[in-house]
Length: 336
Image 1 (cartoon, rainbow, N blue to C red):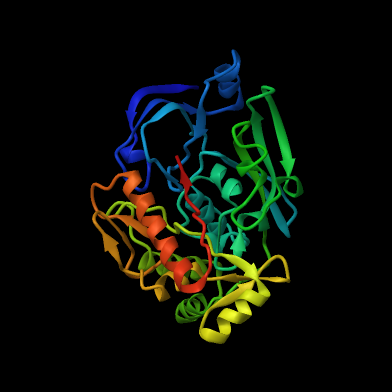
Image 2: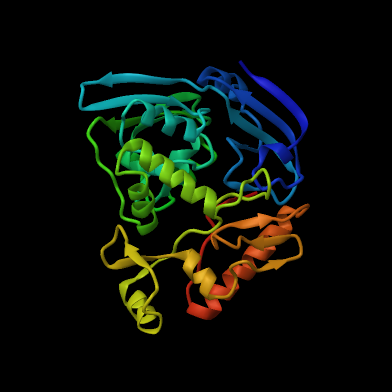
């Protein structure tokens, strides 16, 4: 079923709480809903607005926003070792994590408390604490707006990378994700490669699914502001991936600089939060926008900021990091 809204206030539909409006917003349940919407060529301009947790509106949107609302979770197969689960695009991601943990299924517990909906997870290849959505995703179901056909992409065809996928590039503006399938395991496989996670889990009595979820939830709540209190999108910047020689040179000057393995062994992933902190920007604010005092990756709307003010402040942070380290940090948030 399609539900339509016109001239809609987007303030409650974006986690930055910027006051912008959209000409039209359509909530949909199924691919058939999308087929009827695009049957006669469809809207000239459109984008998907899921939970509004990874998007920054810098102006009113004069096109159509598509919001998935189907929220089913179905176990397709379970052989006692692993379970294949189909998840509708409108399911809240953290509700899915809780669903899995409650059933003793491993694989996405480190992604606890990441805001947004399941349909957005493959687009951004969401990740945290050594895990990414691609580790669990087996296939993605989508509707092609150019052919009016439903398609299924196997994980290998999704071109997952660090906060990257085919949905941000070749299929951008041509496909709408309707569901994902994820493979979860009944076998314990804790990933505790981050010191704060290991400490929090140990304090709770050991590496059970529930303890890991509670530990990561506690860490994220301690570090990241609640969007209900301060508009934000969680991590605003991506961790930069640089050549190993560049990382080695920086380590010579800053021996305590965190560094992590990258998918390409010739490169190293650096911690953007550490770079922002050491550039003197952690806790810094200008006007109605600021860097969070406990998590330098988070930019916050301190009250009444426009999207333009947020992006201008973000450029200031990028400039400070570039001047200090010669490193460019890119935004994780989608800018409209």
